Image: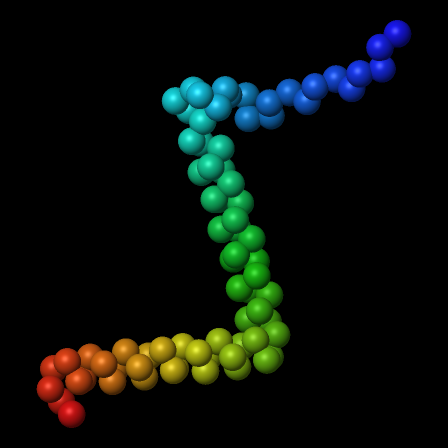
Length: 75
């Protein structure tokens, strides 16, 4: 008797060489985006995370405003 494990089927249902194999990457990207959205919402619910996010956006905005003003010769 052979006690080999049965091979797992390809759950994507496509061969890697087929022209439709890129949809698995798209599906993974969608899952990652949902994960990122969850992490952002979870971070925003945390008071320290919210403060860090606000400070980071203000700093990035200030640097952008400074560079934009300098490029237009405002200072």
